Length: 333
Image 1: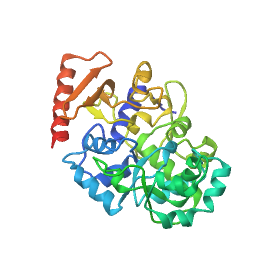
Image 2 (image 1 turned 60 degrees about the vertical axis):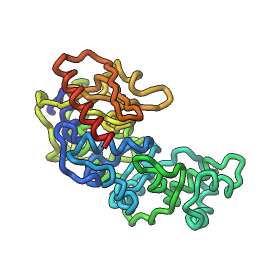
Image 3 (image 1 turned 90 degrees about the horizontal axis):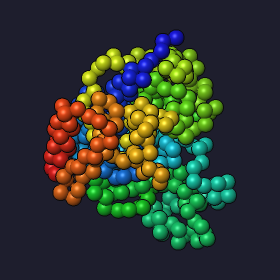
Image 4 (image 1 turned 120 degrees about the vertical axis):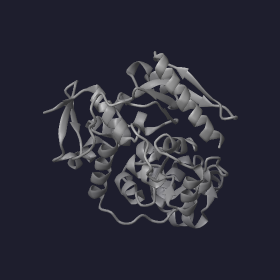
């Protein structure tokens, strides 16, 4: 069985995450290619698409959100992502048995209120809590949102959101057999993040490994330098280890960082606690030669500041400065 080095795995991840070469794919195609984009911070998907594409305009994604072509559901790890309407049935059916943030009692009560909740939508979280009248309505409302397809309103996902904690009733997803949805999700993950271990898939999705074991049957396998089995899909890119990796700015919570157990592909172990904070926050990062070497932030005037976390060469600093200037121009546009 072929052994893939850490650097080969790094280059594979960069290629599949569209971080080796910018693409001309549409925003919807990018969202589908990387299997959803983390959207807890509203600007994150916009920056994530910008760093992967040529000529991206924020208005293009905003129009897709308002048309309903892009949705903002709770999926992987029980967190908010942007996914396309076309992909929503896969996500819904694959995650429908994963109950994050509510228990059996909240689920049982929530299931009796789905029809009324959808009729009341759009509604704010405060309005929902007042309607429910529970001493602790948070868990019941979480169950209602998940099971009743009450998703975050498009206005909450704009570059500058015009609403906060507003929920609307999305269309019921098309029927899809549960095992087929799981298999599709796992294969899509591998095409966007692989080759990867079972623990990587679990860390990305929060799905128990036993749930998706059948989806891995018959797939190509490799080993990493630690001897762990890596699963992959046929004909997925495996670039040479010496492929040049350009500087890339990633937004907060980018799944290229969070898509693996302990985030080791792009994030060195000694920087993990500096980038992934105790409260679950994940800093915006800068990739240099394919790995995290800095954090960045932008002020209200779109000025980008870079804080280096690892040694870089003079040439690499110049490349970071060039990319920061490009980001500043886009933020200010």
